[in-house]
Structure formats: C-alpha cells, structure tokens
Amino acid sequence: MQIKNSALSLVIDAINQKELEELRLQFLGRSGKLTLAIKEIVKVPIEKRPEVGQLANEVKRAIEEAIEQKISNFKFQISNQKKESIDKTTPGIKPKIGHPHPMTLALYDVVEIFKKIGFQTADGPEIETDYYNFEILNIPKDHPARDAQQTLYIDTRDSKTNPGEIILRTHGSNMQGRIMKKIDHPVRAIYPGKVFRYEQVDASHGFEFWQLEGLAVDKNLTMTNLLGTMSYALKEFFGLDTQVKFVCHNFPFVEPGAEAYMSCTVCKGKGCSFCKQLGWVEILGCGMIHRNVLKAVGYDPQKVSGFAWGMGLSRMIILRYQMDDLRLLTNPDLRILEQF
Ligand code: DAH
Image (cartoon, rainbow, N blue to C red):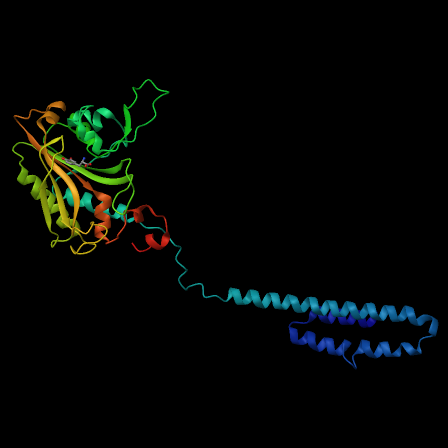
C-alpha cells in the first residue's frame, strides 16, 4: 500500500513523459520497488500468499494505468499545443464565392453599350397575352407569320380567359406595344429577356433562350440610323474587326425589314457546325416599325418614325466565347462555369 501511494503521488507530480518512464522503471522495472516487493512474497506464510499476491497485482495494475493515463494526457496536450502554435497572422483560406454567369456578364455589357447612346433598359412579362405578342404587332390570328413562331400556350381551361389567349412570349417584341403605349415619343429603350419556343433543340437552337430587343422612336429616324446602331452595338460587343451584313427580310411589324448576319467567331468565317458551314451567323432581326404598329400604340406615323430590333443574346454569348453549343449556357457543370 505504501508503495502504491508513493508511486501514485509521484505519477501525479510528474511533469513530462520522460519522468513517467523513469517512474515506470523505478517501480515496475526488473529491480523496481514493486517487482522486488513481489519477490519477497515467498517469505509470507503460505496461506497468506494468494491474498498478498492478488494485492500486489492490483497495485501493479493501478500504477501502470496511472502512468498510461498521464502519458496520454501529455500526448493530447502536446498535439493541442501544436495546433495552437499556428501563426494566426497568416492570411486565411479564401472561401469560394460565386461569380456572375456568362449570360449575366454579357447582359451587363450590352446594357452599358446601349446606355452610352441613350437607351434605357426595361423589363417585361414572360407570360404574355396573344395581344401583345402578336395582335398589336400587326400579326392577326390568321397571319402565316405565326407559324414561324412555335408558340407554347398556357393551359387556361380553368380560367375565364379564352383558349390560346395566354402564352409564353415567343419574342422580346412583346414589349414594343407595352413600352410605346406607356411612354410618349421620343423613346429609346432596350429590353433583354428570356423567350420561349417549341423548337427542336440543337447546337444553335433552344426552346428557351435570351433575346435583346430594343426600339427607338423619334422624328426623322431612318433606316440609316437603324443600320448604324446595329453595327455600332455588334462591333462594341465583339470587337471592331467584326463584319456585319444586312439582308432584306420580312417581319410583319416592320417595313422595310432586315436580318443581320455577322462573321462566325467560332470558326473565323471558315465554316463550322455552329454556323452550319456558312461562315456567317444570323444574329438579329430588325426594321423600321410598321405604321400599323405605330397607329396601334397611339403614335402618329405622319409625325414620327422608329426602328426596332431583336438580337439573339444567347447566340451572342456563344459567339463571344467561341463555344460551339448553345446548350452549354444552361449546363450547371462547374467545369464550364468556372472558366468565366
Ligand atoms: N421578333 C423577331 C424574332 O424573334 C426579331 C425581330 C425582328 C425583332 C424585327 C424586331 C424586329 O424588333 O423589328 O425573330
């Protein structure tokens, strides 16, 4: 018992692992105090030996356990000290934060490009009435131009609305009527947004894509103003060496109308799957706003004229970053997104 008490109190007082190892030798080693005491058991009367032997074993175990426990305490303290010894003044690891999607980056740019020449930015509904998407734009119910805009209809069976009345807008032109009805001329506005069509999806077509529409109405605006504005915007966005060509095209809401093509940036005009081997990509539709549209919004076509256009914004991004597939823009794969 005496040995046990003195061993345990020495273990408690030990200040490092080395001292503990010394204590282990001092008590439990070959010529340690306890080991020698156990050897003395032979001198104890035979009938008392089992009892004394058991006691000696218990003492041995108690000392061993106390030493082991203390060693593991020291180890724990040392590993904690190591952690503590980190230099707190070194800069931390920066948490990963997101960044704007290429779509958003392009949006910022085009808004800025048009702001420089006096265009305001507007926003409008994606779920639209037939009236603003078609009727007011000189596209009555039986007009063949409706076929070209594969329309997605909203199911209105449970509402008072007539069937076919509410649709997903097929183009950003739905905003023309809304803006001109609300704002008197002169007006210059752009309205970027998503549009929807029941389209066969491929590298350059999607059922949901972005357009950047805009219009300007004032006294004496002519086709030259339109062509100049479009060339300016495309060259600002893609670089001054971008080639732009205009080709006559019919849209019911403009007269005359045109489509603009720009040199394909993916293949540098050589021909690739994105430009269907043409070297040119259709990038926008435009024209002088039809007098029927001006009349429908309450403007006097004798006094003012205007131009409007609709650019394929998703397509512009593909061309800017030389991606070869429109679908990459809606792909959430971080390996794509982290490149921007
Ligand atoms: N809305 C047409 C389309 O999606 C593009 C367009 C053509 C818009 C001529 C216009 C325009 O504003 O004047 O195909």
